[in-house]
Amino acid sequence: MMLSMHACVGAAIGASTNNPFATIPAALVSHLILDSFPHTDIAHLAPLNEDGTMSNIIPKWVPIVVIFDLLLTIVIVTLGVLTYPERATSIILGAFFGILPDFQYAPKFGPWLYKQFWYKGYAWLHENGHCHFPLSYAQRFYGFHPQILCLIGGVAWLFHC
Image 1: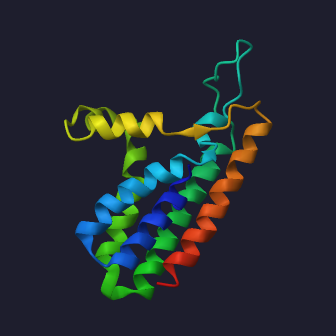
Image 2: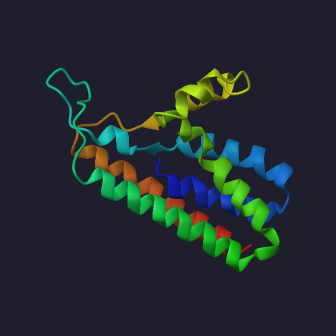
């Protein structure tokens, strides 16, 4: 799923609880719950090879979407902190731990994260809990609709705490 959606829901959890010790595990669990919804990840939008496997070719528009997603994440979290400055710590922790599981896909950080004894079980849950659209290349774009709905819900939750 998109980082902005995970960060927004994590930030909303932080704003709701205003308790860093409750925010961290709740944001991690929210990541698993949200990934269980049918969705499409950016990485899965690569064209398929003739044998049905994903190609290593990255469409030219993908970096634009990733940058937009990152900027949207920064804007949402910043607005949450500005709206609820007394809950800033919990909002930031919620956003960070809401997206932390996806760091395992980062080329430099992922291998380190997988080696941590405390992360191994969670990594298994994260990998096996995903619900992706097993559809053709053109149909995989439908996997963004659940994410957009979750993002709208997360923004509404964050700013109505």
